[in-house]
Image (tube, rainbow, N blue to C red; front, side):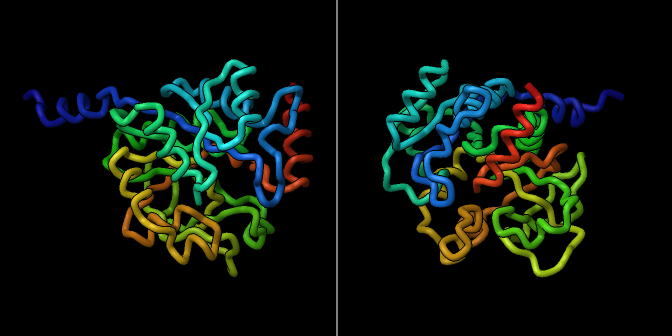
Length: 260
């Protein structure tokens, strides 16, 4: 007998959803000012990230920034960028303004890819998008297994605790995010700098004031959890080095220059 319910689910999963990738970026990062324009193999970090996002082939890609230097660099390297306010408290607030300026409020999903993640794995970006298309999740993000125990105490490495163990098939909920974990936990993972929002969830997120948790921990995703917005987590194949410090920059240059 033909299974109409199963056929419907296949059709629903295969539904083409319109997605936009926006990369928030600014020159005045506290720990490493000017990092978007730091050159790696002759190309700025922000342009590396832009090209990586385009390679994922999920949807149009834009950089959202408050700095003309970043716009000039991105455009010079064949990318697209939009000028936003310098008053934003988080990257998510910035990407929503960019979305309005671009007149792209008809999209289904918006991906916020951090501008300091030039080694983000393309397949991981695609996998997060696939999970969001299949599910009815409000926000999705990525996390990787922690292989170095020293990372539990490293406050530059954000950790996420999930309600279930991560594996390739599951998309469990985040229980909490933290910069420092006092003890090892099987359900604690290295959080990566990427979010995928349903458009309606993004609108809801930016309507809330910053929560005390968010301000104290300098983690914008806590604003979502503090306002009962669920965040689901997909397992990443790789744990890329994000650039927050000079040591990170040295490490990432070695990796990228070696690959070239």
